[in-house]
Length: 427
Image (cartoon, rainbow, N blue to C red; front, side, top):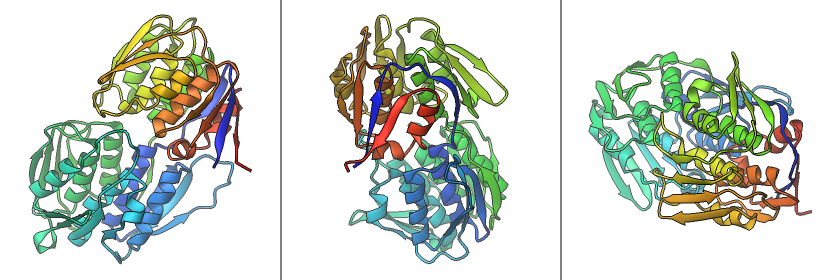
C-alpha cells in the first residue's frame, strides 16, 4: 500500500493549479442519465472517486469516453452518453465504496420511473442518513421502499407529478438528488431551505445548459418546471474550493507565498476570512487567489456551517494550521458528529488538542515533529499532510488512498512549490 513521506520545514513558494471540484464532478456525472444525448464534462479531476463513479454509470449502460489528454496534464475531458439505460440497479459492491453513489437515485427515477440503489458508504465521519433524500422524492410523488439494504423508488405512471418540500435542515446531497429528479417531472417541484453551496449552483447551471427550467439558482428556494426531455451539453466543472483552501493552509503553515491558479475567491469567502483573521495576506487576481504568510499565525474561533458558512470539509485543514498558531483556538463542528478522527494523529506529531463533544481547543505549539501517522478519511488525510509540511523531521502518512479520492496528484503539486514530499510503495 502506498504511503507519502514528507520531510518538513520547507517554505512553499510558487503557483499551484487548482483542479476541477471533486464534489461538483460527482454531482455532474449522473446528469448524463437524464438524456440520451452526450454530456461532455471539461476540467474533470483525475481522482479515484471519479473513476469509481464512471464504473457505476457503466452499470446502467452509460458509456464514458475520455479524450486523449497527456498523463502529465491536470484534469481531463469526459463524454458520457446514456443512449439506452440497461439497468436501474446500483449494486452494493460499488455503492459501498463511495457515498456519492446515492446521487444516481434521482436521475434514474426521473429517466426511467424506477430506481434501486444500495444504501451508501463513504468516509466514516459520522452518521449521514439519506432520509431527507427520500422525503424530498416522496414529496414530489415517488413511492419509496427500503428492503434488504436497498432503496427502491418508483414514480407512478413513470413520471413524478411534482410537489413541494421544505428541508428541516440544509442538506447538500438531498438538494442535488431532488433537483435531478425534478427536472423531468410532469409538474412543478419546489425546494425550500435548499442548500446554496457553489456546487449546487454548478449543478443547476449544468442542468440549465441541458435544457432544464430552474428558478432561484443560488437561493434557498428552487423552483423546477419539469421538462419532457433534456438534451446534451458541454460543461466545465467548477474549480475545487476545498482543494484551494487546503493548499492555502499549507502555504500559511510553512510561512510561504502561493498563487492558487483557477481558484475563485467568491466561492471561498468563509475560508479566506478565517485565513485573513489568522494574519495571512490574501490578494485576488482575475483567475487566481494568492496567499502570503505574514508573521506568526493568530488563533481563531471557528464553527462549521452550511454555505455561506465555513465548510466542514475545511475544518481539519484549518485545525492543522492552527496547531502552530500563537495562542488557543476553538473549533466547533456542527455538521458531522465524528469529524475529529485526525486529532489523535496530530497529537502524535506534538499537537496540543483537547476535544469536548463537538468542540476542540487547539493550543498552538512552537514546533510539530514528524511521525508515522494514519489517515482516517479524505480531509483528515490532508490535515496530516499540512502538519507534516511544517514538522521537524520526517512524517509518514499511511492509507493515502483516502487522499487519492479527493486530491489530484497532490505530491506533484506540492513538490513543484518546494515541498520535500514523495510517494513510496511497500516494495
